[in-house]
Length: 288
Image (cartoon, rainbow, N blue to C red):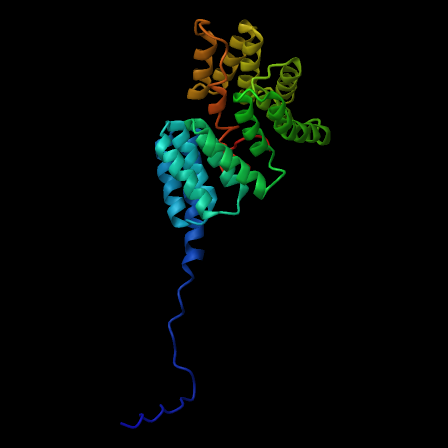
């Protein structure tokens, strides 16, 4: 059968219904709104409600590691280890060239006790970003746990130098002072310099409970229990609903059956994995 005749040329194009906006554009505001709502819950320690919002945001934009890392922060706070690992693996798979995702994955593996996989994740983060000071710090903590103090300090020095440079550039900014003080705490280094950094941060921003909580733990590790209680009580007065600060106080006031622990410090959503951190990709993970 011969082909049908071509249609007659029309004098003007037929009218068409305007094409709908691309799905990505429509989803973006949704994701941002969900993240904002989740952050509001997160700051109130309502982690399950926050997780629901962050999970929805991740589904709306599955290739954006931000929502995945925020979700991981919630599972960290909820002590759901299986979901914690699953979430940070999803973040790393979604953004395979993003060092921050692998750093957070390393934190998750460290927290769950898998040192081998934690080392692999930290090493991958450093491979992607050799200047990622927090990944160096994570690797340093693994080396410290193995008794390799010299090698650990070499890794710690990346973060220490980074913080000291920030302090020089911004001497009136309490954030880098607190970041360094908190880093010392996480590494079990309760020196006079660490306490001086924490106290200086408090003097620059006297109403910030995070700074008081860090200083309290440092004083506790130095053996000044009374000063530690004084400071953590001040932090609780500023944020009475914070489960984190309450946990620190329980640790400080518990009978001294063992050396002071940094356990509560690693749960600080303002500094760690939490942390998710993670430089803008998680609830404020530090002062970087």
